[in-house]
Image (tube, rainbow, N blue to C red; front, side, top):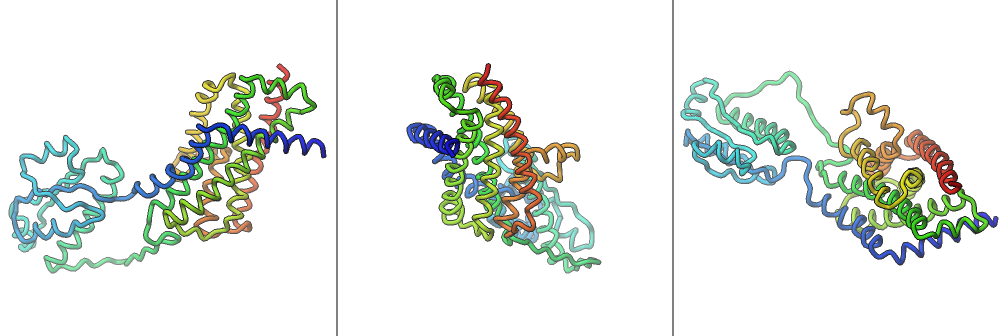
Length: 369
């Protein structure tokens, strides 16, 4: 029982230290508010407000109608452009799309010929260019078939239904991914900087002369960071994601916070392990950058896991972030229960346990040296 008191009191000491660290408190406030709201409300993965210029050499009713069918919010109103200026505006990046309607386009179409319509794309804007070119092609095909009186006959009619996000709003997904990213960064930073600050200030040596073990010191870091970050995550979900962004989270909040606690247990163990490799806070920061970036970029939150090489997919199964991304989206958006997500929860617990045992062994060695 007295060991539990030690762990509790050491955790309270960490909380008091955090309360007096104004810079870290400001960073936490930013990470769970503006850092989530701004990307989710201001970023768009699909085509949005793409700039278009129209080179109308035909100057016909059809060419003017083609310009009119490109409407907001996907496309800006097309800007008339001279043919000689087409290369210049593409080179300068002024327009993402430049549509060239050639001479006699309407006459050739009505005569049953197959005239060509040129769409020039600035592919440096990759997301807009790739998806926008497809959008524009389908829009023009529908308009041209309607004006020419031809009907397209397809063997199969496809009906697409978007599940869990009927309007395909990318901000919903981005808000949750931002929370996952910030939870990862804060879990590692809070634990690592606290341990290294104690080492640099000599507080760790004071703790070692007390009847404390390495396990008690490490567990005190773990539980207080779990409490702080889980509380901030809950506030962010309720105030920023639900109210400010209007994202409908249909899943169990309690189950998600439990999963977050398991994930924080694993991340805290990773942070302790990194502190045994670093001797100062700057070294810890340099070690943290490749570790955190790999966890965030290859976990399935930034790019789909299925699009990666098979060997990399297997490697990332040993990263806790991969399972956390899968669990978060399943619980919050698809209302998945424990009966569906328990394999990922078990994998997350096992990964956290392995990291914790390894970090504890390294931590004991570093204290003895």
